[in-house]
Length: 452
Figure (cartoon, helix red, strand yellow):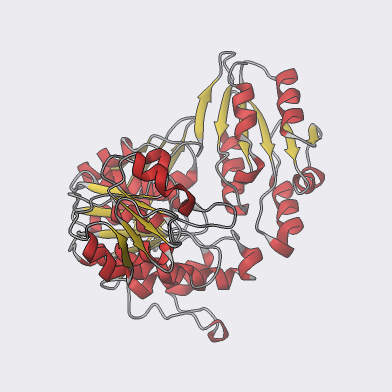
């Protein structure tokens, strides 16, 4: 689009330059800026992108979109009231130009890995643009859409912390198929109840083009929503007007059901309707993710052999159930990107099922749980049974430690102490799970152990 279109869409004004210049890509980080990009200055609580417009121009930005009047009128500069809203408006406009399949994925846990496996399946038929990493918020999602070029399908991840956030995202992305992986306890400190989390996730339906949604039928609240058994006082939209496609392991009434599941250290195998499906990542929760991808692929008419190929070749986003082989022969299960009750429980259950190795769980704080923090950490401690050694870190991690009913457990006050403790006890056949919320920086422990 030309700069004059950007000005019109964003209700901005040209401070200086040529409005007939044509823009291609948009970038908010001058470190990643390429020649010819439009630089968008994002202003946050601790960072003001407006201060870097000169750097952007020096690095070849064709134009800059700012929310503050620049000191010097150089290059092509557009001034808008709010650059974040400007990017959202531009993404909404760009999305409107494309008549393509758009799959939107949300849920309390597993969004990124489910997005990755769906994208791998979709890529067997389409040229797919997907959310990179977990850029799933009010800034990351618009930039993803603005990067759309010759792709003919999108798989978009949508995250939220509060009510109203997915409403904004879905009305930008306008998905043609919605996916909800589960309703757990992530962000319950902000939303107050799991019913409110369900309500927030169902906002995805507001921008849905069509009426089809894929849900995890094993999840109690999603199943209750499908059956319209949620109490009226929670004022949750009825499922009656939607084509609800279900998948599950335990709920045999689902449209897509996994049978004869075999879990290995680095893969999972299951049967579905006579087809053997192999997932190149271990853990029952990845069986659910694969079922979800089968449901999505089938919806778009992708053949089962292509779906199987997409599942078998998918790659996880880094730091999510990533197996790291140590020189000693021990393995790290690096699941350090983030943590909430549901993902922590799933990771522990995976570790417990590993055979032939001593099992060590290194667990830290799960954040954004508000008044539920102590309760949910203690509940994680309650489920720890078939683990040889537990190491916990953090002010909340101590509650996991206190409730764990195993004798060999250690609580540490820092990542450095935890790494030191592990180095003192590590053996060649150990399987070491590391999991905590991202801000706990457990990646430090992983890096400290990689040479052991």
